[in-house]
Image (cartoon, rainbow, N blue to C red; front, side):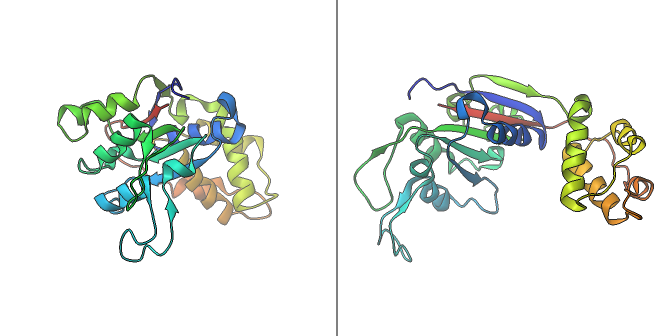
Amino acid sequence: MEDRLRSTLVGLAGEARRAFDRAQEHGSAEEFVQAIERLEASRRLLEIDKVDERLRGHVKGAFTNAINDRDGIFAKADGGTVFVDEIGELELEPQPALLRALDKRTVCKLGATAHHKFDARVVAATNRDLRAEVATRRFREDLYYRLAVIRIAVPALRERGSDIPRLVEYFANRFAPGIAISPDDMQRLLAHGRRGNVRELRNVMERACLLARGGALDLDGALAADLPIAASTTRHDEFLSAP
């Protein structure tokens, strides 16, 4: 579908990814994710040739150890969504491979000659300010505008306290199924400031469950060990979505 909405979802580090996962879990926005292939974009993992191969796939014999045909990310996600995590960490050199696929809406496997169309939305997340990255020529301007059409702000966890009880219950059931959460414990967790957002809450809950005695959370011990971290410049996650 050529007119699929392209959007940008913005929030603190970790928040945009969680918002995307919630959309996936609840099937919102017309079953937002039908098929997802996650391309983790980090300097350690994304060598140029690997990005190209993972996007396009390959045919048998295309290179050493290519013993079978393999579909690329776009082919696997045809009819669904490709989620590119931490796209702000993607170096300049691999970016044209992603741009070409988005522009042409076709991919050609490595070692093949035929191009195949795909129909997949692309959602990209980053905790960098990509507009600033464009200004410093570390991120391609054409790729940024190809991905980002609408930017949606995702507030920090401390600004949406109504989500905290659900997260507390989730982490409690994960780390200590059946453990009791008293109203006082919940109020303390609601009142506790979290610069670290969901990751910090998860850390506190895991520690409170490990220190639990008598089937009840030990928030005193968990929060006492929650060492303060110097305030840092706010960094944002972005979701960049292409049709």
